[in-house]
Amino acid sequence: IKTIEDDHLLDHCKKMGRYFEHGLLNLKHQFPIIHDVRGLGLFWGLELITPEGHKEKDIAERIMYHALSLGLNFKVTMGNILTLTPPIVIQEPQLDEALNILQECFNHECG
Image (cartoon, rainbow, N blue to C red; front, side, top):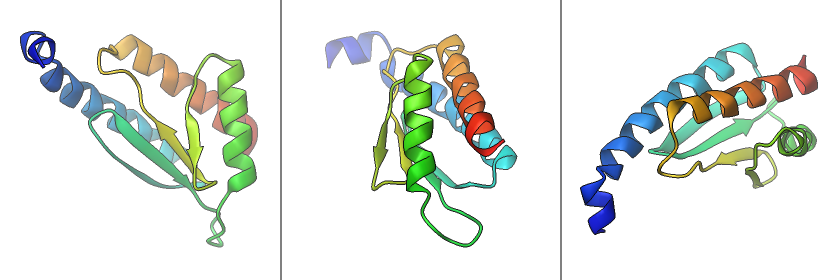
């Protein structure tokens, strides 16, 4: 707790969370399959649903494995939610890299 307080990690987490949210919402505007972006701080989920309302389990898994091959690790929750939990000490350049990888994966799968 002392390190969190001394290094102002809670404030950093809030700031990076807002930055990440902005980038994730940009992805949502580009890719209609992203039905919802939700989270707090540095804990985020992208819910994938087709325009017809079907959960996109196959695409979620393909995006996860494609991202992993590019160096981005996250998990899929409930079959169709990409769950992203970057470390509390992450910086903007690393978040940008993660967002770029996600964009590449969505372009590849949803093109």
